[in-house]
Length: 236
Image 1 (cartoon, rainbow, N blue to C red):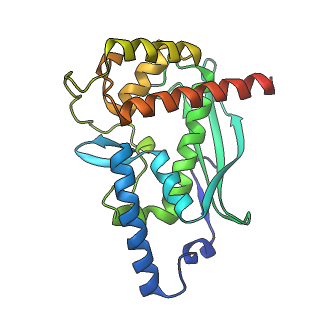
Image 2: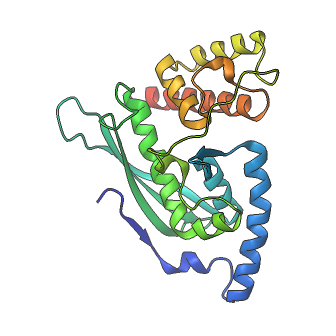
Image 3: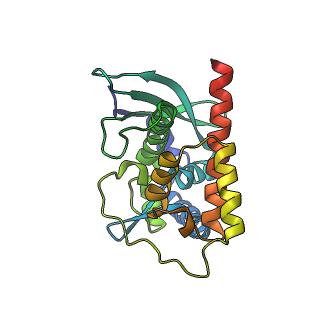
């Protein structure tokens, strides 16, 4: 069933069999994770709270030797005109043991997803399942790091903080032209890009992209979309 999560207890004992040592090590990991999330801005502000995006959750998983694997993606449209996908992701150890599994769905019937491309909806179902599969066994460590226990991708109705004003930290006209070129190269539509900017950074214009980590995140996202498109072309 979509949204259900399975967890095997051995996954919770990966840190240590000793409770005191487990907490100490988890705290050390949380202390190392926090600066990475802050420096790379791997979180979204929702209702004044910091919700870590899936990139931050996968970073935490990698620090523990845990990696998400997409095992199934299927179309589950329930009515004419609806585009909906359900994805299943397993969280595995480096030796291949699955310690948890989660499913999540995304549909163009959702607020904010109407009119979106099929590939984007399919990709979002995988993103949500990835965040969910990491959340159950690792949410307590994310909380130790000072962040909310729910991945940002699961928070769809939160009130976001006000967007930043344009200032000298925003990208230059030359950088903006570079961003637009990369957008076209990745074959990302304007509506898809605007939704990404709104969801991830709470801005509605490419001109408000700031230099540094936000610019890096945008370019990295373009590359992901480009690679995803190449993979889909090969499959078809």
